[in-house]
Image (cartoon, rainbow, N blue to C red; front, side, top):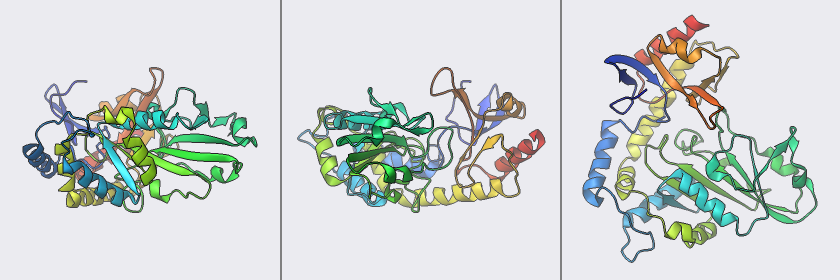
Length: 342
């Protein structure tokens, strides 16, 4: 379905209003007037685009200022912004491929952090046998913090069972957790212990909860310095500086939207019983239902949810998405409809 205006809590199709519970704008920032105003001020200061290498002789100080702020918020030593989450993943995979023997990936890991030679972490519900050998090697384990069709953070306790001869780098994609999970609302990266791993690196799209067209790479200072020196980073244009300026000016807006999302989740789940056809977590804004006909049943009630083939043409993604911008009236409509479909 084609729309002529950015979706918020409503979309309009053939002059008919539909309640919209889809997308990935969990904090509702993309259509929030106060946040838009901050971005507009950023455009006036830095222009609509800046297509130069980050290594050019003229450097915009907004990059360093934003990266220092993000590193502090993520409680990590350093970070880099790039023009997309996909590029963030590809830069790190390319960098790690130079020094690591093997790559492994969780099921449903996003293609941004899938190396061409990556092996599945699990084979027939057991850890891949090559992970358990005594061979000393440098390996990378890649995972989404909250994978597609999941609503809980992955459990990395299995790392404690791997042989000490394995020097492990954990590469974590936080695209669907940064901004909405963790003790400070900035994701799960800092909560993952490093006792049994050599290093951990985080990448993420900033285009979901964070409402920014770009990506991020975070980790220890030495690793980030190395990544800054790679050909792929140096030959790519940086993230749009206007949006970085907007981010610097919007700390209070983010906190307010995070509080609104928490309240909307509390209100939605209060008194609502969802049976085992639903995959949900009362503290996470995605609710999955893969039953045939579920999408069409909601559509008949003028409710549109996310429903399309993803990540492959053979897979169907079907989920309800709550955002900070939904009103209690919107949520009441959805709750009532779900109860009638029970």
